[in-house]
Amino acid sequence: MLGTASPGRSWVLVEHPGRWPVRGFVDLPLALEIRRRVALAAAGAGARILLVRRHGRRDGDEALRWAVVHHEDSGAHRQTWGTWADEDDLLALPDALGAPGHTGHPPVLLVCAHGVHDTCCAVRGRPVAAALAARWPELTWECSHVGGDRFAANLVVAPDGVYYGGLDAGSAVDVVADHLAGRIGPTFLRGYTTLPAPEQVAVVEALRVLGPLGRHELEVLGSEPAEEGWEVRLRRRGIGTLVTVQLATERSRPEQLTCRAAGPSTVASHRATAVHVG
Image 1 (tube, rainbow, N blue to C red):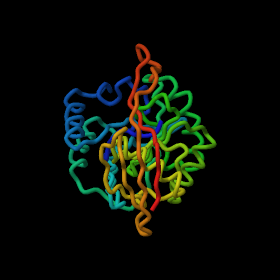
Image 2: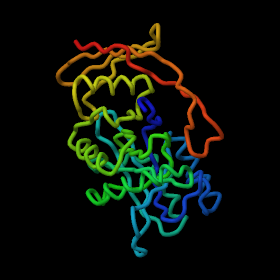
Image 3: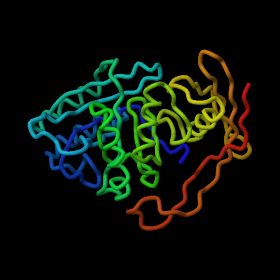
């Protein structure tokens, strides 16, 4: 599970309470030109489009919402929110992708519940969404496919850019409470979306040694190929503690990566062979 956060710094969220197509936004029953313009703008900005909905029954009088959320390395993350009643309203999204956005918003909690894409995501994801919505109703959304179906239930905290996996209703509440308090731990952490896979794994291993830290308390100083895989150097901001993680790169055993997969596949993984502090 380590090092499997899908790369990204920006997300486009489109509320759609109905049935979600397998491929999400691109196959919604919207005018082709609208889907094309939004998809092209998102691709140009390096943003991932996710369909979202509230857990449970929706009040039909509420306006549907959309958002663009963007990660900043400084921690001053930016968000832009709007509503849509007619599909033409979604043409505001390309402009929002290029706008500066607003800081100060709390993050959103995105729980993959895309059952049409992978049954496991709905079976495991919806109880997690229910538990989080009971505690943080304004922050919590069910969302379409985020990658890593085999790690369901999956949670993305955006625009923080943090992936968690292997959650259930109880552990998810604890993980989010710690996350919001600036205590990200290693146990359910898949990785940070702003880092390549070896550096994601190194962050998890550093957290095992240093203990839970805030999203921006660890700085990756650099990574370079080593004899078995990679060597990653990190520093704890403010204190200056240095951590060096040595990783071996290997292929996983063949496994069924998704419910819809035609057969078993292998993936590259990174395993810590040594962690040095100081």
